[in-house]
Length: 139
Length: 337
Image 1: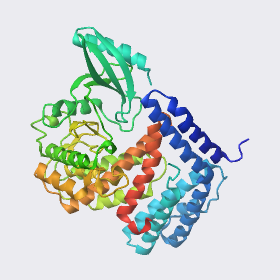
Image 2 (image 1 turned 180 degrees about the vertical axis):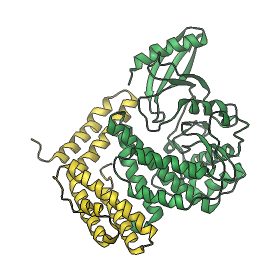
Image 3 (image 1 turned 135 degrees about the horizontal axis):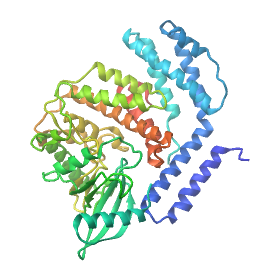
Image 4 (image 1 turned 90 degrees about the vertical axis):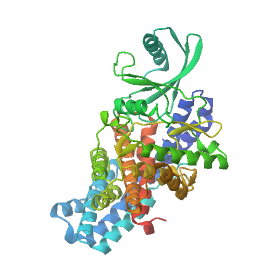
């Protein structure tokens, strides 16, 4: 059992990059291996924080939807009110995607109807979303 | 993926047949030579002489969905001009040799592509050449070079809209997750189309640091990766080359070489064209949207298992992340910190 999967992945990435790759002779394999090492590092970060980051996004999007409720269709409101089916990453991802599609549509409506305050709050959310998901695990 | 041994045997047979003389393939090395094709560097012995060639094989999947005859046709038409490109040798659509179509070009001697190897003075020299060459490319008459025989000719008014529609389609078709930042950018681009192009030029399509080779004297010896070449607004290449993604940590330097203002001035002088501020802003935002489309497309290929190359995953994840923050900085710089 590996209780701290993210830490284990980081360790494996380090081993790959520092101990195994230097022995490779092909420049292509060396570059490919280095990319894989970097990706494992980023996956480690996602394993540790990915679900929480999406839950934070979902909570923030729901606040935006409350502010823009008048612009939402009944179908969109139904999706927004749906509870997460589980905390598995795939389920959280799917729900996050559904809400993001509604956000894209709402963003367009704020532009069409020139609702500046809501439009700015969506941009502000996208800024926070971007900071939250910024890939920092790469050395 | 095929083995290098397989490439060695097939290349010897193919080139021997083409040149009508025995060819020995002494060495085969797979290299990163543009992510859209598998690229191999071959060292040959032909009639007692050693020469190098580059073989580019279509993979089942790639970063960019391109047609090989367009890329090869671009090399073929540019090679006789004053824009340096590798000599195109053969384009083979028959899949009997290597299971996929492939092309072969002469290798460039002593190639270097990492500008970090250059001194500060050499960076200035290479930067000037880079934008002088791009200006000269923009100045060329695509009809005199018969580019209209292999590519669609857009009109000056609609070329921006044509490009936007194409790359918007790629995002809509290939996105695995919704892209709220790119979609906002697309809406802005559609609502604020630029003035007509000054002329219809040959657009390289991926003109950036990393896609040209230079030698030990800091001379650019080859412009590579013409797979996205098309006809269109010459500002498209200039804007793409100045995207912050290619600047590394110093965003003031165009492709890690020379300041943006100097790059633009060099381009204007070499092309005889102007850089309209309004149009240029449009093409810079477009460049980032196009880049997002390419990264998303690679991500889709990796997700579907059509491509297993790690660079597809890297582009689809890390590059999309960076490119979205570049777009955010255009539209809402106050939310970036």
